[in-house]
Image (tube, rainbow, N blue to C red; front, side, top):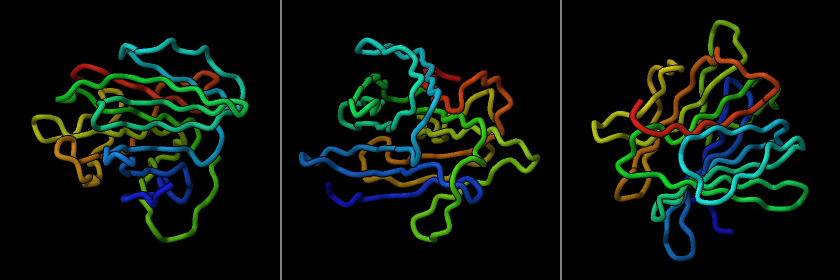
Length: 196
């Protein structure tokens, strides 16, 4: 595996959630990937983007999870490793984009491990009111030059990462307090669609 062109560790406060990569495959096609550091129990996803393949049922065993975006194919991929077996789902993303790419909901970010190293960190400030539930919004810039957010989450200013792509060359990341209902899920990934 080649060394990523861009690599950041996503830190909330001092808790290490996962890694964000940008790289190119052997054919020179760019892709963006977010992978969780720890395995995830009670994973749930929600989307109204049409799935190109059948969607598996909800999982009740801990899984390894990656979310990636293939720039040339305009595909968002969810890759799960369940009991050493890989499962993939693909979602077509229209360009120009009309919503944020995905939203990561974390019920309690304080349960993650502390991270003390200093290199390649993308540090997000958690809510200052003591709420442990957060939403992290990942978005490209829209035609108007601003990132997309979501009406349920007030993330204020979003940080930006420059990517070596001709279109969708800026990835924005923001964090917000999450006061929405979780139920039994520890992690949710939402894939909004259409203008919001």
